[in-house]
Length: 490
Image (cartoon, rainbow, N blue to C red):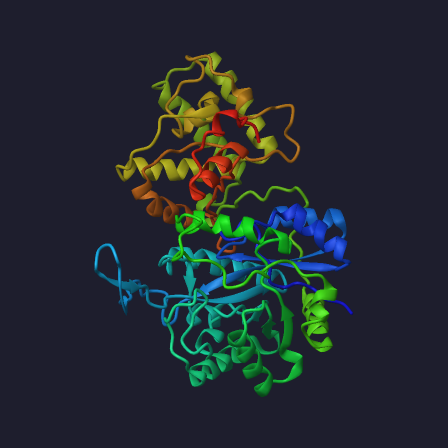
């Protein structure tokens, strides 16, 4: 019997999963499974690292995301609190719970179109639908469903959340038992995803709630729609307590707090095929393989950099190199107030040749246009920070205000002329205010070809051993006396 796990979270599901990508893929190899999906909450940040790890070990990578879906519209950002009738023993105030503002949905990229749509949905979830979580809605799903495979996700799924007699994934009464609404939502997904919509059947030992959901589905829909699933947040059953401690960081509660949020199961780990065979029918396992076989997309790992391209209207009939050269020469002349200086000219000619050879002309012109617009719009910008301050080209274009010739700043720290083959675009710190960032983003977009987009970079920090030890101690009410003896290394 074959089986593919299509619902798995990694450490990129921040403060929610403790699975590391390398250990995940190693465990899949150990189980003899041929593919695995990564479906982190609200992001696809693991895509590159996950694809590399899978290719090295001969595993088929499936890229996906567990999206948060707004119950009505992504634009709604205010929900009334739910009165519980319970009172806090200390303050004597009534305990209020947050209303239901998001449910779950798994999306898998079937092909390149699906991958682009998945990335678009993730972006819009943050830019337009963010309320506690990055959220999408049915309007966006209808617009960007092409090339995607959708599954019903866990008990907190967009359909299943209405089948739990009022209990949501945290065990709180946020939704009413409403099989009619569940059926309406089911019809919506079938309409927009067709044969690429599947029902996840799970069994984490939660008891009658999950069993009743599974039974509701099995009574109404054909066998080919069912896929066996195990929502994975840690690698083995032995890691439950470690993961439970980890969740305390998420909710900022002590480990022994009886009222803190915790998983309703001890079985949210990566199960072997043999374990899954004990819980599900054969066709429900085989269907996971059929879903994996549908996946045609694999993230290209060619090591090639794709530099943004400018509109033809922006270039006005000239090549990027011609525009780049003209603006650099004009900019340096302006910097020197019309005077000619052989030292500056030689430095500029040398740098321009490096930029042109490396293919960075259009990239640099986009930065030049952005900084020019910022200054014309009275947006504060930096004078030049980092290695970019050593470039005469950036100085001539007004991207930086540091004179590298006068200050004797080396250009080679910015771009190494001896290593230009497939070189990464140089990092330029523009430094404009966070409050004006959206406007700077929009002004750049029209300059780039319409089939391309600007991207936001995100940085994920990881705990090293010492920080982890300190955090774990605070969660468990430890005195922290061991901290001075813990090394600072990884």
